[in-house]
Length: 386
Image (cartoon, rainbow, N blue to C red; front, side):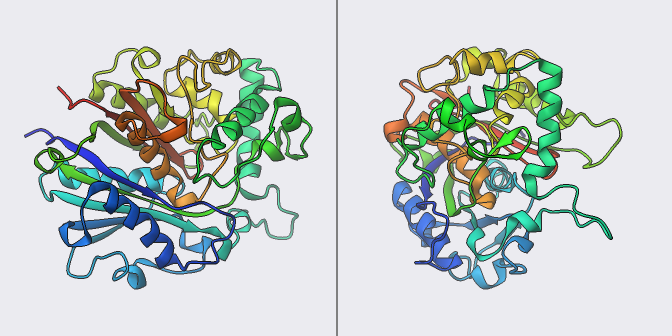
C-alpha cells in the first residue's frame, strides 16, 4: 500500500529574536503551537501525537528537554517522539510527523521544533578542540568557509555573488513580521563593506543566532477536507552520508544530489526550475544559495552563481528563493529547517502575507545539517497529488 494523502493545515511560528527573555523554552514552544492550532482550527485535545525536534542538547546545556517539556507540548497521555539530525532536524521532524499520517497511524499530528540559542553558545559548541594547539577553525563558519572557497575556485564565481544573496534575503525579511534581522537599506555594497569573518565569508553574509520555534499541524485526507487551504504533501525525502571520508564532495554532496533526484521523482517533477514556484532553501551562509541551486538541479553544475546574479532568485524572478528572508535573517537552529518547510506550505496556501509569491502552486522546503551530511526536503502543492 502506498502513502496516504496528507496535508499541512496549520502553521505557527514565534517572533524570532536574539534573546526571548519574555518566555521559557516551554513558553517559546507554546507560542508557536498555539498559533498553529488556531490556524488549523483545532485544539490540543484533537491531536493524536506530537513529534518534537531540536538541535544538539549541548547548544543549551539541557539534556533531553523533551522530558520536562512533555506536559507543555500537550503530550501527556499521547505518543511523543523526538527527532535529531543536527541543523536539518526541523525538516526531518516534519517528515517524521508526515510519515505517521501517510502511514495511517494517526490522523492529526502536531510537530514542533525550537531553539533558544541565547541560553548557550552554539559558536563554541561547534568548535573542534585541538589538543595543545590553537583551534584551526571556530563555529560553523569556520567549518564551511573552505567549502565556499572551493566552490568559488571550481565555478569561477565572482566574489560579489554572496553579497547579492545576502542583500536579497535581508530585504525579503523586511516583508516578514516574524524575522529576526530586519535591516533596512542593506545593499550589495554594504554587505561587501562588512567585516571579513571567515574568508571569504563576511559578517553580513552570515546567519544570526536566534531564539524561536515553529509548529505544523499535519492531517489526513479526511481531516484536510474541512480546511479552506491545505498544503498537500507531494514528496518527502531524507538522505545522509559520512561526515569525513576521503572521497567526499562537500561542495556538492552525494547525499544532497541523491535526495533531490528522489524528491523530484516522487513529486512527479521533471524540470524543477519550470515546475517549482517558490523555494525555501537552507542558506546559513549566503554562498550556499548558488551551491544548493546546483545540487538541487535548478542549475547546471558551476552555473548556480549565474542564476543568482541574473536576479532569477529574487521575489519576482523565475525561481524565487527564500522570500521569507531565510536562515540568513532568522536562525533558531533546531527550528530553521521546519521554518523552510512551513514557508513552503504558506506559499502554496496563499498565506505568506507580504512575502507571498503570486500564484504559487508548488513549493520546495529544504534543510541540511551536520557537516553537510544530513538532508531533508519536501514538495508541497495547492492541489492534491494525482
